[in-house]
Image (cartoon, rainbow over all chains, first blue to last red; front, side, top):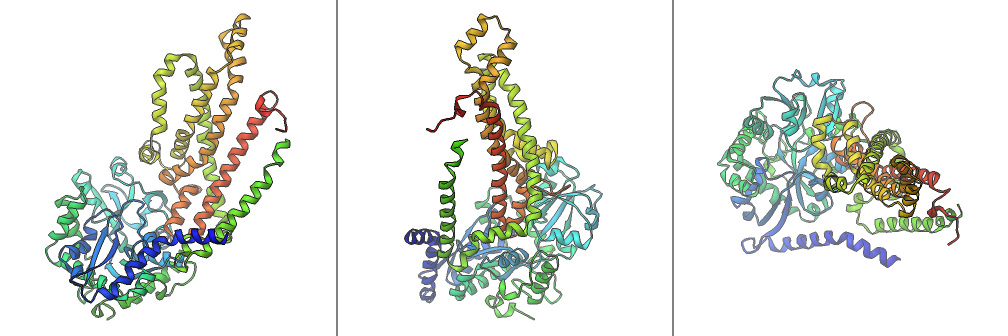
Length: 336
Length: 263
C-alpha cells in the first residue's frame, strides 16, 4: 500500500521534478549566457494582446537574451488559469492582479508578486452610451456580467451600500450588442475599440476610479523564486525594460509578434490599446514624481490587503511577506 | 428487498479505502503543492463553514434541475408517442433530435440568455436539453418494442388504437421509460449546475452550485470547491433515489426485473 501511495505521489510530483531540472541549470550557466540561455516560461492571462506588449517587446528586442534568459511566452484564454499554473509550479512566471494574488496566497498557493506590470488595472464596466447608469452608485438593482468572486464586487456593494445582480461572464460581445441594458466587465483598452468598429455607442466606468485600485503584477512560483533569485531578478529587470521600451519607444516589434500569434489582433486594434494604455498611464502610473514602471509600493499593497480583510474577502490579515517580495525589483524601483 | 443489504459492506470498505488513498496521496505531496488537494477533513470543515451558502445554492440548483427534468419528461413523453406512431415520423425527426443532443451547452448558453434571460429560465432549458434525449430515445424504443403477440391479441379483440396505446403500449414501455428516467435523473443536477455556471444569475435568492463553483474558483478556495462537488453529488443521489423509488413503485408488482430471488 505504502509503495502504491508513493508511486501516486511521484506521479503527481512529476511536473515539479521537471521544473526543478530547469532550475538547477541556471546558476552554473548564466555565467556564459551568450552560449546558453536559461529557459523559463511566462504564462499570460489571455490571448496575446497589447496588454502583454512589454513582454513581447523584451523578447523581440533581445532584452531577455541580454540577461541570459530565453523566455517562452505562453498564451492564455478563457479558463487558462494562470494563477493555478504558477501556483502549482507548471510555469515559473505568470501575471495577474495583485488582489487575486493576495487571495491565492491566503489559500496556500505558493505565488509571489515580484514586480508591477501596470500601476493601474484597465478593468472597467462597459455600458451602452444611453444607459441611465452614470456612476458606480447608480448600479443599484442592475445586473452586471462579470467574473463572480472578483473582490471589486463586494467593494462596490459596500462602498455605495447597494445590491446588484451578477451574471457569469460569457466571452464575446454578441450579448452586449443585442441587449441595450447589459452592463459587463471589460478591459478599457480592448472591447471599446471593437464595439466602436461595430458602430455601437458605449461608455465605460473605470474600476480604478471607484477607489478600488489594485496593481497588475508579475508573479513567480515561490519555491522557484527562492531557489533561483538571480533568474527572477533578471526576468524582472528585462521585463520592466521591455515595458518601458514598449510604452515610450516604438511598439512595432511587439505588435508584429502579437499579430503573428493572434490572428484577431489588427494593427488598428493594437494602436488603440497602446494609445489607451499610454494616455491613461496604466503602466507608468499617474504619479507626479515621474514614471513608476515595475515599481511596487509596500504601503499601497498593504492597504489593499487590509481593505480585502475589512471586506471579509480575506478571512484574516495578510502580511506583505505572504504574497510579495520586493527584493527582486531593480534597486531604483523599490521604495521612495 | 433482500438484495439491498448485500452491497452495503463492499461499498463501505471501498469508501474507506478511497479516503485512505486520499490522505496517503496528500501525505506524499510537497508542502508547496498541498493547496492542490485539501484533505477530506478540510472538505468537511468547508462543508460546515459554508453550509448556509451551499444549502441555498443546492436548493436553487435543485429547483432548476426539477423544472428542466419535469419539462423533459413531459415533452419526451409526447414526442415518444408521436415517434412511435410511424416509421416515417421517426425517420423525419430522429436526426434533429440527435442534433439537439449534440448542441454544446457552452455555445447555446449565451444565446439562451439572450432569448429568455439569465438565471432560472436559462438553467431550466439547459437542464431540459441535457435530459431530453435519453428519455425520448428510451421511451420511443419501449413504445415500439411491444410484444407482437400481445398486439395481435389486442387487435383480435378489436381494441381501438387508443386502447392499444393506453392499455398495452404505454405499460409495456414503462421499463424502458424508467431506464431513460434514471439516466436523465443523474444528468439533471449536472445540467442545472452547468447551466448555472454559464447562464446563471446571482439575483433573487442567489445563484446555484455552478455559481458557487465560479466564486470559490476565483477565490482559490479549494476545500470549498470540493465541498461544492460533494453537494452536487448528494443532489444527484437524491434525484436517482427518487427515480428508483418511482420505478419500484410502478414496476415491482408485475415486471420481471423486480422479481424476488436470491440469485
